[in-house]
Amino acid sequence: MTISKTMKRTSNRRRHAHNNGSPTISPIKSLPNHLLVVEVVARVASHSFTDLFNLKKCCKEFLDAAGDSYINQHVSLDKFPLIQWFPNEKESFFLNQCKESKNIEALYREGLREYFNYPNGNIGGLDIMKVAAQNGHMEAKYVYGMITLCSKDIELRKQGLDYLRFVRVSKCVIRCRKRVKNLTKTLWKNDMILLRNEKTLCNNKNTCKGWRVKKGQWTLVDDEDDDYDDINMCEYCRWDHELEFFYRLFNVH
Image (cartoon, rainbow, N blue to C red):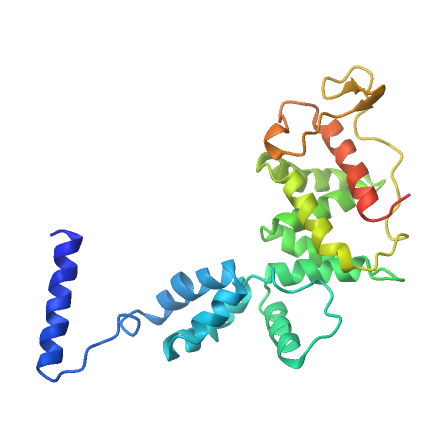
C-alpha cells in the first residue's frame, strides 16, 4: 500500500471518528515518549536553543519532553556567550543543568574558562576539555590537541596528535580554529599558562615536501580552506604551522 493511500485511510478514519463524536488522537500523543524525546525534541535542541524554546510553547507533550535530562545533554549552546557577564537566574540555572547532564559543549566551555582563567589558570580545565574531546566534541579535540603539542613531554604530544589527526581527516582544522577564535573573543586569557615549544615537530624543514618557499620565507601552503589541506603533505609540518596560529590566538610569545 502506498504512503498516500495510507494517509488517506488514516484521514478518513479520523473524520469518521469525529463525525461519530469520538475524540481524535493527536499524532504527537500517539508517539512513545522515548521516540518523542530522542528523535524529535533532542534533534531540534541540538540545532538551535531558540527552536527548542519555540517548540516547548507548541503543546504540553513537547514541553514535558523538553524537561528530560537527555535534552540538556544534547542542546546547542551556540546562542550563549562563553562568559556570562550579566547572567540572569534562568540562564544560569539552564546552563548548570546542561553541565550536570554532561553536555559536551558545556564541558568544553568550562574547560576553556578554567584552563585559561585570568590571572591564574587552572590545569584541571585541561582534564575537563579532554572529557569533551573523548566524547566527540570537535573544537575540544582541536584545543586539547594543540595545548598538548605545546608540551615538552613527548608522550603527551603523541596523545595530542591522535586527536588532531581525527580533526584533520575530518577536514575541520581551519573551521575549528575559526570557531575557537570567535568563541574566545571575550575570554580574558592568561598568557602565562601556555609556553612556546621551540622544538618543532618536523626535523626536516629544508627538504620536507610539506613546505615551499613563499615570499622568501618557508611556509606551509594554506588557502584558508580545509579542502586544500592535502592529507599527503607532511603531518608534522602541518601542526608546526597550526601552532603558530594557536600561539597568536592565545597571546603566547
